[in-house]
Image 1 (cartoon, rainbow, N blue to C red):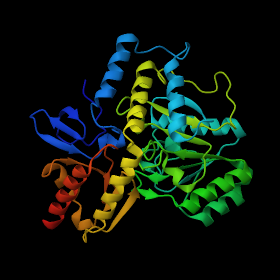
Image 2: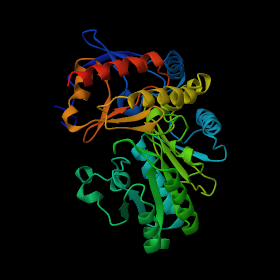
Image 3: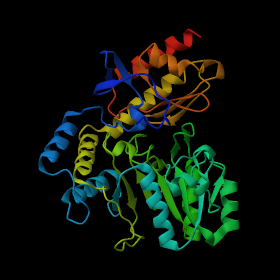
Length: 378
């Protein structure tokens, strides 16, 4: 049997990782400023993280949600404290797609409606409802297509207002990334997020803040939508939550009432996943990583804007997009091959910087020097 060939793969076999460095099978070191799609939030192989998972595995790794799992309540308490959403409830699952799937289902259960408002260049996952709300026809199978999802221009307040005028009480939920990741590191404006909140309140629709990639402290706020000074009804999260261990969740406002069987999962909230997620929150709190994300992120953004060959720098904290002109389309590849630096991309020509939240100014300078070198060779 061979693998189903769906991933374009760099010919690099990573066998060891520590902090923001990874090493291939031949011992070559790379700087990781992408963290496997914004997953590595506290650095690879963090000692506290490794110890927490190891200790938990020696006790019990898994049992289903048919028994008490005190680690879930500990995780919920810590998450409520650091996110400032103490009165919200937590449902644990396994991935960002699953988190958004459950968020959309919960919204529909709550108000009995079907219509979903999503936005151009959005990415919410690959499961049935999540991919239907994703603006990428190439990954939406015929069975996923539905007239229940309406796509509107991102940050277009007039279009959003008109949609509520047209569909009114049909709208179940509005789902939005505070900063679009795959969509090119595009930030929702404060006024747009506040308008979503206002319209959802007026029409009794559910405001879903997709914080899968842009949350968990990456922007310097716990959820990127926090900078608008409003609360969403449901927050979805996953990537940085387990530092590589598969875990996802939705944080649910008090307006929703739970009932047995409404939502469910076999593996979600298992002992190992909770141990991993608690370790991540421990380090975020202990090492003030939200503050570090703001500080290093501001420094990077300021310095990147000084490069005259860069078209635009977008983002917040350590979620940064560097848009380059078409003639510099090889820069991302050259950073990996020639400077041994992992970064991400968004089409057509945006370099995505999504490092661990505990990177240092020295690491930031290493990247800036490498980018300067690449731009000068073109």
